[in-house]
Image 1 (cartoon, one colour):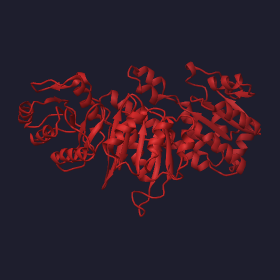
Image 2 (image 1 turned 45 degrees about the vertical axis):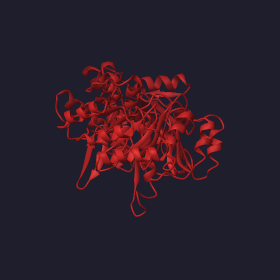
Image 3 (image 1 turned 180 degrees about the vertical axis):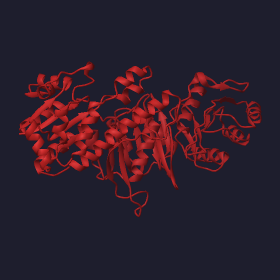
Image 4 (image 1 turned 90 degrees about the horizontal axis):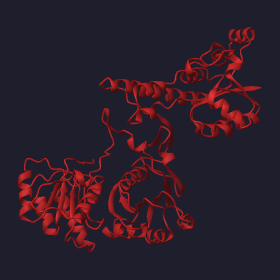
Amino acid sequence: MKRALISVYDKTGVVEFAKALSSQEFEIVSTSGTAKLLKDSGLDIKTIEEITKAPEVLGGRVKTLQYQIFAGILADRSNLDHQNDVKLHGFELFDLVCVSLYPFKETIRKPDATVKEAIEQIDIGGVTLIRAAAKNFGSVTVLVDPLQYDIYLEALKTGKDLNQMLAADAFEYIASYDISIANYFRKINGQKSGIFDIYFSNFEELRYGENPHQDAVLYNIGYEGFEQIFQKLHGKELSYINILDIDAAYNLINEFEKPACAILKHTNPCGVAESENILSAYQKAFSTDTMSPFGGIVIVNRKLDLDTAKEINKIFTEIVIAPDFDEGVLDFLFTKKNRRVIKYTVSEEAQMNMQLKSVTGGILIQGHDSIVVNEAEMIIVTDRKPTDAESADMLFAMKVCKHTKSNSVIYAKGGQTLGIGGGQPSRVDSSMLAVEKAKRFGHDLTGCSVASDAYFPFPDGVIEAAKAGAKAVIHPGGSVKDEEVISAANELGLAMVLTGIRHFRH
């Protein structure tokens, strides 16, 4: 009979997994809460205490840290001396160790978590069990993630040996766990850590990178990785560029609380709108620029309905992304063979991830740009104050600005982009591009609001906005020529608001 030790904090799928093991004639050994759950589910299990003949002590801090348990895990089946010790002392051997650790990372993310609470979530026995099983992968399988359960059960059927791969996963798992503890201790002592905490749970080879001659791989980070947040329901496999576009679309749409739609191309928005419903939001977003959306990405922040899907279907769209779909919508969208259809979930954990970018000879790491300016933080610096409608439009435009390549200038009115300019070496060029595109697609800019991702270094950008019909301008401020820019705004009768927050996007 094979023997499995199961001791998990994350109990997702563990009952079903234990039942599957039991049907394969595994003896299940378990601890504390896991043991109770499995017993209550009708499983015949053995407790750790039955093997060790010792009770849990110190409030559960010591339960598996017993030599009988670790001898049963660390015994090398091919080592005769080990086998002699097993027979001499009657050790019970383990074939599988399934462990997930106390939620240290989740605990320290809580704003009111105390140091004492954090320390209590530092797992000792679990880490030791994982490390022992991973070291002895020649004789023992180790699992640390519910996502591995089905993989292991399938390997049991086929006889495929995954132990070394799973051992690597296990060492990465505990390394990430330990790094998070070290970083926390550094933080509460006011120190900076030179260790970056990142846990790649698995990876997928992509067809190629930005171009066919470049190799590419997608790594999933942690337990809310890309493949857990985005589920491809239909279409060709995702490419490197598709994934960049999906990420850009996801980060942009999450800025909005009202029903909203964004259309992107090459990670830049070509139309964004919020409205009373998704159909209206899509129509407004599409009207911003009716040429660029061809072959682009459409994302919405509400369940996608059939009427909106039919509107989207009028042009070729590379990817359609939504949190859910009304009945019949997927069947309709699936009629286009190659179009990717993506369902997403909002992950607050993933949105806190650090951002990495490789450079020649190094890696740049930065925090997520998570700041959103609100009306209370806007500093009015002109004689004329913005109306409520202008304030709403400025905040809307700044959200889009934040996700458009610098230098970015956004013209908006009524919760809709009218002109988008970005990626230009001059802010005036971006403003002129936004105005030109707005006029090309028939938009009247009279009374609109303008947002800039960084300060206007000279009055010329503001003058161009006023010529186009803008009545309100929002930007971070901070230029040595701020007074000249504000003076120009006063002369032109504009309302101007400073935020003190720059949103460069390179």
